[in-house]
Image (tube, rainbow, N blue to C red; front, side, top):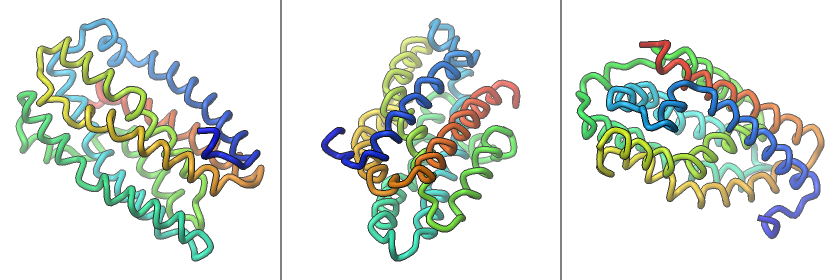
Length: 230
């Protein structure tokens, strides 16, 4: 990590993003759904409902990443190329999530019928990120990627194991989480490089950290609404 991030401002940004992450972890720990998961009281119905609410955010993810890439001008052509590659890697991940939903006993028609508006957290998260992605040179979306990719790297494999243990599902039901648990380490390394590239002024640092904070809060709202939106 230290070899990748050479800029002093980017190193300050990394430290600030790590503080945002620690606060995000505390917020996650207060969500009843995840508290039940930690206690081993997570049901198969909980898991199906989580996937049903999660799918739309996963679909929108590749859209906002693509929009973000298109908003960078020629001075950031290298950044645009890196982000396009990331969008290409993940643009069909929702299909893996759908397969997990069916393997866990859900009906494909049910998850296809679910709308983003069924979860106000997903609606707010999508609206904020797409707005930011549409701005010229949206370097602050590195903060959004920090939260979302961090979940994959730090939480996904652990959550998959806890879900399997609590529900009796096997790994055929948690392929989406396990895939991201293995792949997002590589994505985080790419993110360190992006941070070093785009975080070069105090203003950029402040914008990146602010967006990370907003996305963290809206992501928690999305998880809270998994139950409230039923």
